[in-house]
Length: 173
Length: 173
Image (cartoon, chains in turn blue, cyan):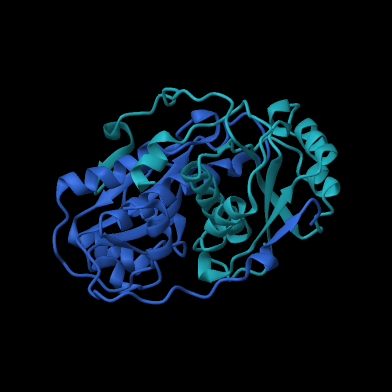
């Protein structure tokens, strides 16, 4: 799919079919995250593909009871690590948020290119997700998404965006 | 350009020609950032297109003296705001890092689709960049990139990445 079509037609999907995702498709989506750039090419990320139904139900519960998270056959949890070993730079220990966000953006976009739906979830208790999936102490959970085929076929209008004039300036703020 | 081609052929470019960028192309690149998703569709971002040569030189100096930043005719500075007004959620005041990173990823990719080079810079002193460009107190500078046509025509091999097996697991970490 054309790049601009991917970013123009991606939507947050909150209703899914239970149809399985082939390993081939799932691998292409994960590989898009894998090849993402990161600061100093550290790749400080790990992705957990949650297929077990009971785990997906508990994950949805931790994510504020957004039950659609457990509808499709897969959820993906992205976390980052090594937050104290980076070399300084601009945002100190928070640079993993940037790195993992880049990779997760790749994943979300690749899913769209494959006809799959996602919904970037940021509202969860970090420690509860870590406990559920045996994520080590030095990791930080950055994002969660359901991954599956959207129930609705029809194209929804995108959420409203600010105009370019509101968000872009030249030379000075 | 096909989505997968964009992410597979994007490179960090550290040598640029001084050729101008048409307003049409620049607008498409900025529009890719504009339509990016963000938590609760807040769009907590602002992008400064730095064209003035003296400002670009000083920006390069602030970014650790990476002089290639000032080679092409444009640099883009991305910042985010409202860090204290978000509704809670997972990473509290740092959620703007995630939002701005998503939009900046769109920008980097759109540049690639347009044949432009970029290099995501994260090493700079936030306050110095804010002072240079009159960025208000409540904004946080997240990323900087030069934007222009790469000097080298030939395709460089990508940086080495971990294997999928190293970064993906199923159901548990």
